[in-house]
Structures are given as C-alpha cells and as structure tokens.
Length: 350
Image (cartoon, rainbow, N blue to C red; front, side, top):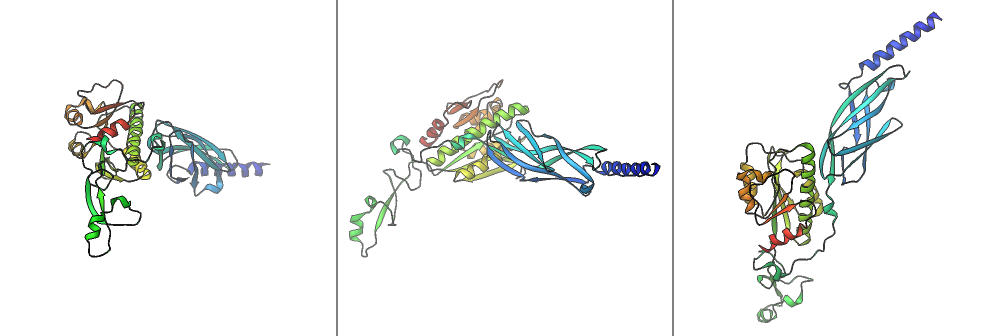
C-alpha cells in the first residue's frame, strides 16, 4: 500500500510539474481561417486550438473569448477543437482575439489557465449598403448640365472619330465620310460622356473619439461610402478613395476601384485608418485632390479643416455633442437615413 501511495505521489508530482511548465511563452494558438469577411450581422466562424510540445500529457480547452468593442463572440467545444462564432452590428475592420485556455493534466488533478492574444486575426464586417441593388444606367445628358466627361459616352457632343468595331451602333457610322474614302473602311463618331470618368472620395479622420462613439461613426462612414461607391459604379464612373493608411506609414493611400470587390477592400482598409495627430498637411492634400469628402461633425470643430471642407461636396457623419464651426451648402449631414445618391447626383452635375 505504501508503494502504491508513493507511486501515485510521484505521478501526481510529475503531473503538477508538467502543468506548471506550460505557459503562454511555450504555447501557441492556431486558428483557421485567420481572415474572415462577411456583412454586418452575419454569424461567421473560425476554429482555434492551443498547441504545446507537452500536448500528449495534458488536455486543453477554450474557456473564454474576447474581442474588440463592438464584436460579439461565442464558442463551442468539440473533440478538443474550439469553434468560435463572431458577429458585429457595426461595419469596419476588427483585429485580434484574446483567448483563455484551461489546461489540465491527464489525471485531472491539476489545472491552469493560459491567456493568449491572437494578433494575426482579422474580421471584416462589410456595410450593408454594398448589397443595395442599383440600376446600371447612366444619367440622362440633359440632367447633367454642360460639363464634358472627356471620355466616350452617349451625349450629343462629338468626342472623337474611330474605326468601326463589331457591335458598334450603326447610327454612329459617318456614311458621307465613308463614301469619300478610297478604301472600304468604316469610321464612326464617338460621342462625349456627360459624366466624369473618375470621382475621388477623400476620407478625413482627425478628431479623437471614445471607443463606442468611434464604432458608431465608422459604421456610418462605411455605409455612406459604400452607397456612394455603389452609385458611382452603377453610373459608369471609376473611383479613387484617398485616406491615411497604417500600412503606408501613416501616409496617403489611394485605392483605384472599378468593381464592388475593390470597393469592399478599400472600405475595410480605411476603417482601420489612424488618426493623424498634430500633422494635418496630408489631410489638406487629400482635400485638394477630392471631389467628395467624408468626415464627421467633430472634424468640423477645427477651423483649419471646416473652411476647406465647406467648399466641397461632403458627406458629414452627424455626431452627438459635436459643434461644427461651419457647414457648407454642398454638405449632407448623414445619420444613416438620408439618400446618399442625391449627393452623388449633385457631384455628377457640377
């Protein structure tokens, strides 16, 4: 009996030593996938497991999961694997998860909790405005004034003359000119576009916001930019979005967009944009290059920004408690209920 007790004591001591030796420094978390993307309110999932060299001597299971403010998490356990469910009612890019695992020896005598921050995880919550179906038609020339888009289109103005190509409308063939040509080649008139070929959207973020206020502000900014981008693509415009970027070393990043996938990527990156701090020179450059500006009413509390923004078409996110110094005539205050397409139409008419 004494031998058995001694043996069990040794085994227990070994088990205790193994559990004690496992720390967050000699373990790692493996997740699959590391990047997930969906729309707001979608319930997405990823698998997580704690990996250790002493895995054969212990059992580990996930006990808690935490993420950034605005992200809801749940998890379920199955055969040593944890399936984590993630959802958010806010649009934007969220990163990192804080995972706490409970480690137990195989005799179930001792336990220990290990907390790991998984920083390489990215969760993209896309704005619902990208899903809104829009008619793919160009505005009528008479509704757009006299501005030339300097690109082929359907207005009454002549843009250029080119060789006939298959499926070109025969009404544009210059028959009299063709009759005078020595060969049998056909030439057609290319009409001028009544809309600009390219629209630049500048995203300006400078004011400091509390975490909850920033979530709500960024959510509306993503929705507004998504609707504007969706409308411009449907009208046949290419888009560039300008914003400050962490990846470019807090310098201006420019996204060239020609489809909804490119629009989604740009919105997710700008939602992770840094505040510029005391240096506003790059913001002035963004304003100088932009056809439309997106910012919050807190940005308009600073006169150096409020004055140039008031002169441009702007989508300004309404914020509680903000006191803008100046609001321009071309500004749309956005609470999520306004029809952003009206602002887009005004930009195309300028």
